[in-house]
Image 1 (cartoon, rainbow, N blue to C red):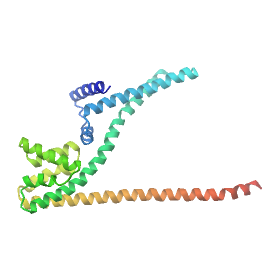
Image 2 (cartoon, helix red, strand yellow):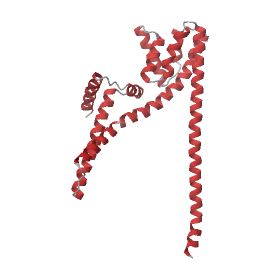
Image 3 (cartoon, rainbow, N blue to C red):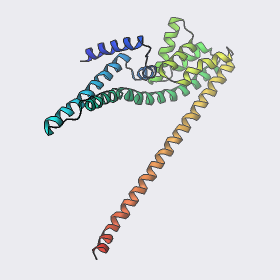
Image 4 (cartoon, one colour):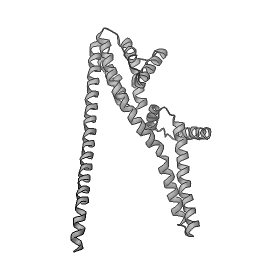
Length: 248
């Protein structure tokens, strides 16, 4: 089954690319989750077929059980709608997993930029500071940065350009814009170090603001739950008295 889905996904990828449909956002999400576009399109096709057949089978079962069937046009529209809706489940799953991994990468990126700035403060050139700082961490974000810089060195690509391309590929704007900022300040080591430090501080402030916003949402949810519990408790203890009064 996986081989059939892979071939179907590859065929869909080729045909849609010819028509200018490239699924840029889905590609970025799949890059972070470790899956390919061919795999995702194969699953989308399978989910769509399952949704279509499920509605069609339900209509047939309803006709057999009750001897009544909805108009054929309505059944076809509902089956097609279910198939299209089910096909988007793959996108939602990939987006959910990618959002969590993207947030984890941003946290690691802020620490990485600080490490690069410290390396440069110790008189290390950017070409040395970037890979040296990436060797410190052991998580997958640092491993991804190490691999990107290693491939850039092998191919002779500028390291900042490689990091910019990585940010574009995984959908992390902070990393994508970093190369542009560094090119604007030139090769001045002090200005590059200041740029990295400022970008790391900005990322920390943004992360703190997002954490505070999430904490506020959870606090409101807890307050609402407490109000509902209190209301239910009042109803529970007052119910016998209300019944007794209504009985007279």
